[in-house]
Image 1 (cartoon, rainbow, N blue to C red):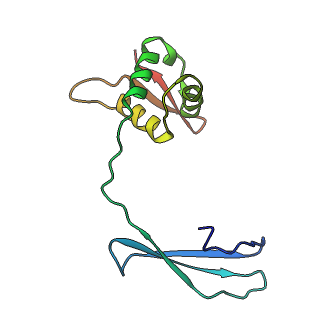
Image 2 (cartoon, rainbow, N blue to C red; image 1 turned 90 degrees about the vertical axis):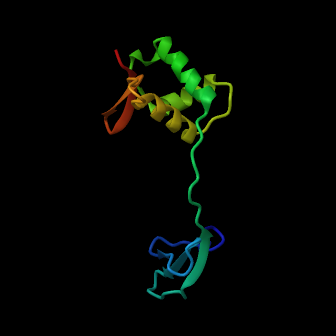
Length: 135
């Protein structure tokens, strides 16, 4: 995006981006115009991005095992937010992980699988998801 959009932005400028995929089903074609602060409209600029479909998320098994360890140790007796968990794992978890890994591990522990009850529950407190252990 930095290569396409102008390098100077004024507070009164407006960038309108539109997308269409009718030309090619393997990519998304984007177009944008810039309306300057004096009302002049730039020429329409077009670019495309490759469309990626069918990509599956892979569970970080070590992270899920560590969360299970924390559950057994009573860490989730008090409700924890996802941000709080991410910061805790960044400090104490020795393997590399991302927010996506944390999301996948928490989702696995929240769902009912083949008659097994979920290990964690999720609720919303002050517009944030909190995770806690089920008794």
